[in-house]
Length: 336
Image 1 (spheres, one colour):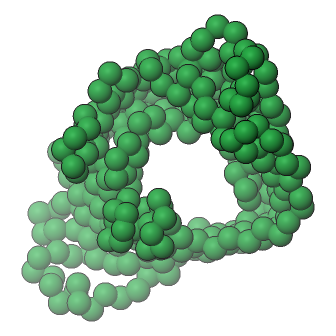
Image 2 (image 1 turned 45 degrees about the horizontal axis):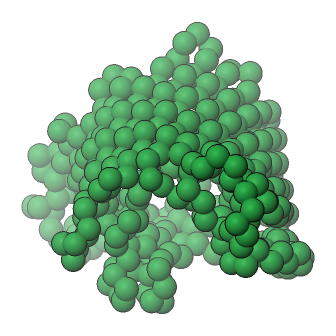
């Protein structure tokens, strides 16, 4: 990714406090076409019409270093932190929901990050989606798990401490209710990554809890020198629900599988996931996704994505009734 470095005279003037500061500007843009089926709260299906797709994202990343070697920095995503008053608006606006801002300080003691960042559970787990698509079709189907379990339960401001040594790392995190009413969200995670003779192996284990609800997750990845990659996610939950296409069901576990292959400029990824219903006879939330990317060089990538979902129909009391929906996109993603 190309980045532009701006001189920061105000920071340089404070050289007695810190050194090696800078601001990096990076961004992305996407253009193409997409179509996405929809299902309303009553279970009414609407076929997705082909539409134009455009998106622009800009991120500022700031960094510095103290005289005694501590690193610090911050980043802000202008696409998310727009102050529009929506759920993704900046914490400086109403409602005070974190949206794209994070700050960190790092040293021999580890790294402390606060703001719009992953909880320890999500930090430890690896998502099974491989490749990229304009409309996130391959990772927005009903069976996909982004692993952000209980993150964003309140204002989205997460504090996480992580520390790494050799091939191992661990993290702890918390998110609190500013009103002092709800139970805090606590998380812990650990990871291992190593090269085992041509196979890069990764393992992650996470636990997150809020009140009487909790989640335990395990992820494993294996990447071969030949370009093949496999990913596995498994999580169990207590007293949790999942929502997709306006349909909500109680679930007690999730399984996700991902396979990918990269050769030269081509990357192909497929994944499958299923949330197991907690009540016998109810339909699961499941789906699969496909991503096909061709790198044109210079930061431009042609992307095709497809997602297929099967969800429980919450508009009827008849167990096992399901609804299906599809989404796809095609276009060019650009990074700067």
